[in-house]
Length: 451
Image (tube, rainbow, N blue to C red):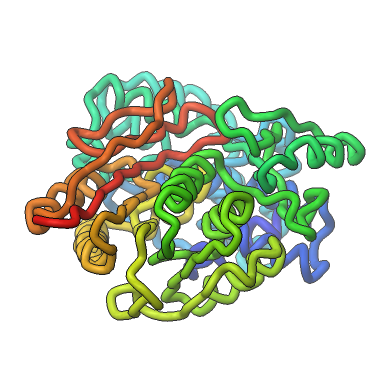
């Protein structure tokens, strides 16, 4: 029961704008839920939010809801139906009868006894017919139905179609169903030490063939439970993110000047860059800006954990108005975006978006890239990165700014392999073909010394 209640609590947090992982981690930190129950809560909650629209469509069909209509249900009733449908059809190792009975008991305890017969009947129908419904959607020739099956918001289909052809889009929809897995980053040259710690703790881990300081795990993991996490030996990070930060560190090594991270978030990539530079430069200089006070504080904790605090300057403020200590030779812009390349790992974000918000995000991306070019020293480079697979947040943004700023010249990234795709015409995509990879885009722009 505590696992189901934890999943319900996580869904409520997602509606209020929090990530499921943050809500569940807080429950565990406060000791309100045991580790075994926390694992069930995580599995249930993520199964529900990854394909939220699909589950709503399925249970809505039994109460007369059209795809564009709205259900008039109490939030707890709707959430119980979401968890029930997702759990019955995705969690093969969990007894369906026990899940349904647990959800019905919760409804009674929350004063929703009148909804119990309806919820019970709907979930039993889904248990009976759900698999055949999923198979029909998966094999449908209609893209909106395949998107529904994949957990891709149907409103975003025009943006996907403008970026990828039908064959690529079908492949991407299939890739969204890959269960994400965790990868661990170590400081340069310390992968063997962490592998030994994992083995001593009876945890599986294998070296990555994409990144020399990465270890792949067979599932997901809570960062504080990883051996060596507390002393900075292990950082939970996707390999796409590692590859991006590694490229920035390489440019930083070549230029030797200040590196500016315009949108540093929680400092995961900044920490990797600082650790990489410390091995090659006696006094690496990295300045990080972040507009969110919560993420700014998290970045400070991250630098302390990694032992990189002295080489990183963290500043709280708006990247459109802050001024760096000196003109940077490398500007790293990890721009706010739809996160469409990470929707499988962070599914909450996609249900908060719509077409208007996507357009607004594009305007912010252009403003930030424009500012990045103005800040960069002549001869320096800007690395523009998103965790989006949508052209309108990537090549289109780069194209618009290059048309305004003739001093910008696009350089090639040394990324090759089956996990990469060339942008049209600029930049490189990382495709999420492995469960340790998220979808990423990166473009490098050099600022010419003379125009």
